Amino acid sequence: AQKITQTQPGMFVQEKEAVTLDCTYDTSDPSYGLFWYKQPSSGEMIFLIYQGSYDQQNATEGRYSLNFQKARKSANLVISASQLGDSAMYFCAMREPERGNQFYFGTGTSLTVIP
Amino acid sequence: NAGVTQTPKFRILKIGQSMTLQCTQDMNHNYMYWYRQDPGMGLKLIYYSVGAGITDKGEVPNGYNVSRSTTEDFPLRLELAAPSQTSVYFCASSYSRQGTDGYTFGSGTRLTVV
Image 1 (cartoon, one colour):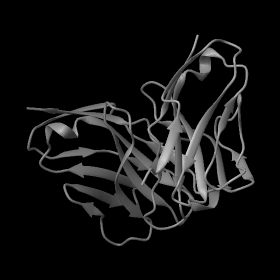
Image 2 (spheres, chains in turn purple, cyan; image 1 turned 90 degrees about the vertical axis):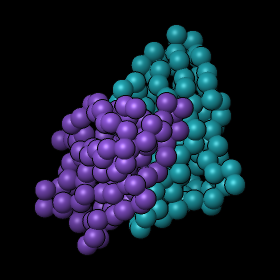
Image 3 (cartoon, rainbow over the protein chains, first blue to last red; image 1 turned 180 degrees about the vertical axis):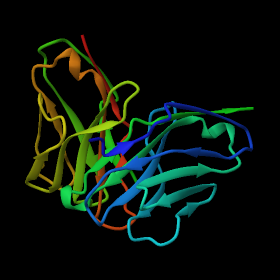
């Protein structure tokens, strides 16, 4: 079974609009971390936001927020007020501490911001 | 602050050749990882290390070897390169198993096997 599932291969959003990128995960570990990374066309991986499995509140970092629904095992990324520079691949990832702290990555969502 | 440094950035290998991808971090991180990213795909774990002298296989270890003689260095060795190893390779490190500590990634090595 896939640990991380991202069902949207590509998304388009109008500049200044909000967009939600979907992510579901699968784990039996009670303690885990959820991350979102941005990969622009230049190729580097940029950390955006983190949500711990025991966190009661949804994580926020500037224009990024994580809609964490633990019972549904979903961790959607919301980008508000999209900018042209947000065009990139976005990867959802899960860390399981009991497995050498390794991360499992989804297949990514390509976001294009339209002027 | 250099972070995670990978060399080389690009490399073309012929089938059957071997090479070592270098990875160095200066953050005193215990955990280090090698991932590969195939076109249009997410990252898959090749090998990881939880400290000097300790390494373990990830999801796709075949055709690769690693060593971790120091905290700073985690080289990835490709023996008998095959076209299936054409990929972008990322080295990453992290300090702890808990908390908000995500990975620090290197800038990647784009490898083509012809």
